[in-house]
Image 1 (cartoon, rainbow, N blue to C red):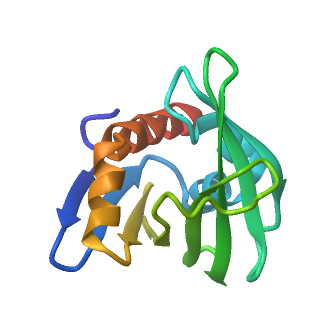
Image 2 (image 1 turned 30 degrees about the vertical axis):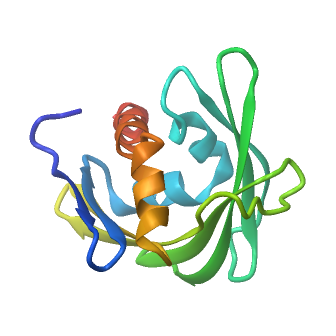
Length: 163
């Protein structure tokens, strides 16, 4: 990661949220595309040596992104994001869930609502991410699964891709 780029990661247990602020050294349009186009998401979303592989993506309100995180031995962990609101080049929100390869949600794992906001600041773009959980135990399970480390690694992949 470039040292001058903002990276804040905080856990707000009282309000059952994870808050991430992450700056990228790229124009808003490029960063927005990286978060909203499957061909680009597949290049950075998974922490190495894992890879993201999109099965289907409809980036529209009511649409969803169905993808697998594929491990070095070929193992697959499926997830989907159901898009709830989109304001182009400004923000979007989606409900996230683990699922099977057909998109059937696995209710054994927590779901969360992601709200991503994009702000251009001169030659950089700030992405502010709020991830809300229904229960504190869901947030704690996510943290225990290594979310912070994996998500931080993904952000570093995106730095490389945008440079």
